[in-house]
Length: 308
Image 1 (tube, one colour):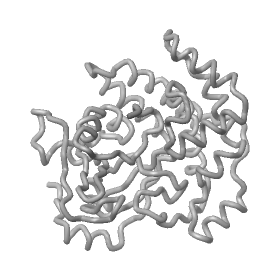
Image 2 (image 1 turned 180 degrees about the horizontal axis):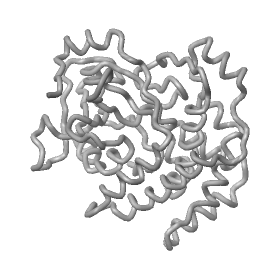
Image 3 (image 1 turned 90 degrees about the vertical axis):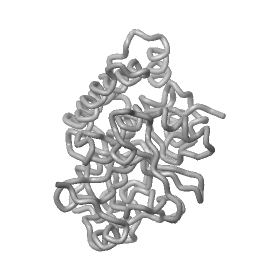
């Protein structure tokens, strides 16, 4: 029987939990297969299957990386010594090391016969290095309006795989908590969602999942990751007759104080749940919460949110 921790017990259990949970080497293959299953009968099936294709190419690149430079080891060491994210996205995205990964992704990806997708690929292939960096800077800084929406999934996929590769292939990393609960200790990017684990030493603990490198870091439960308040938090889910409200595998932790929310996946209720696929298949929940006046601060780099 799974153990359910009350808020006081959660704080006690979290006094010395494993801080990090790194993604598996087959992360993108797992995402692809999960999305395939979730796409069946889904209103956004065509889009989800497009992402499946991107995830498959991401996995190919993880398994056979392109010839490309890596971040300076001395720089990584200095960052770790000072408690800074060693793969800081806001600085490394301005350099050239990630560009061969984008080129490899665009060459390997077989786009569906859709004019908008084909045009997006062509536009990325023909763009100058300066333009590509400008778009990437906008994407990792959450300024989606500063780049064409059709480019987001492809550019985001390239950035995700190279940052995950760096994370998993740099030995002896020492990562410390970021300046805010929602900041990735590895690259400084914001969390995409949270996962409530259910096995072994991670049982009952919440880990936030980075929107860029997929690093997971521990943050105690029943606390808003943005304003750090616990008062009045609510947990809402999509209307689904298959699950009681307190047993839904995906719920949004809603904070009435700062009017923000974060999606949480409960592995006890769905052991195969995965952050990116769960997020993309629950966009109706985002629409509902937006209508109720709540803001989403957690980006998904494969999806361009609509404007006002």
